[in-house]
Length: 330
Image 1 (cartoon, rainbow, N blue to C red):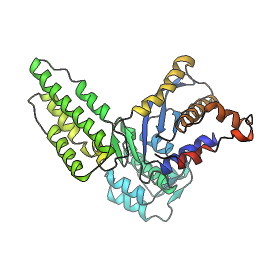
Image 2: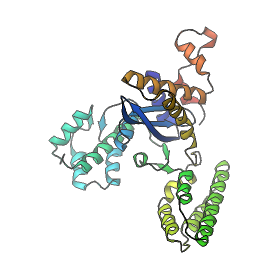
Image 3: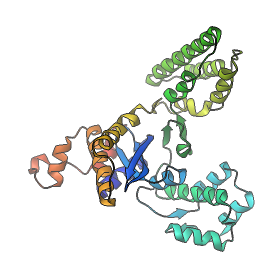
């Protein structure tokens, strides 16, 4: 478990991006959720009851449990439109570091803050968790690539193009004219997607501007098909997230890697069902994560297990995985 947690910490501290996704899980006869966090260097799985943004931010602490009010936390609150007087009250208090959830909630009561306003408490708690992530030197410039699930929408968020295009695919035209209009726009979207993939290989400023203009042309057009036009407006509002790749060419355009990683959890669930004990849940998550990480680092998982169990000779030693996560090229 310690090495798995260290893998996550090293990945979040050094990876230029993380790709995230989740899937259903069963634990102690109750429904839960398994969250995948990974990149080209590592993969970890975490299973719990909640799929909230609070839960996701707590996972990004890589085992930490503290809450911190710092510049990152204050900026998070301002982005969430938290009342300025609340931000000022938290910013002006001399205590900024809280070692546990109970210490944090006790602080909110003593401020005083309206702890019966669940939205407010959730937003300031999310901010304090995000502050703790930065306090530990994690996620400072890391892009989160997701399928647009709400819990993953934090700073530096990029949207998966495949999931965005699926919204177009789900439309159900009623007449042939609508079907033709939809097909024409889908062709334009996939053409832009292919050109973005090519641009990533040899990015240039001139081409970047052209691709951004093409995005506006595609999602700014109106076809007369009401449902399609409404969806185009909706996707156009997500321009910054869909075109994050133009600022950060190293990030992927999709979350296919996350879906591939999660197949191991789905297969395990179909064969074995759920887990009952906390140790069993932890063992499943840790072993699946370490197996995926070894594969990404080009290490035999069986050689890794043999080394950790003391079965390998000196010439077959496997280095500490977090060290490899740091030095492996993205």
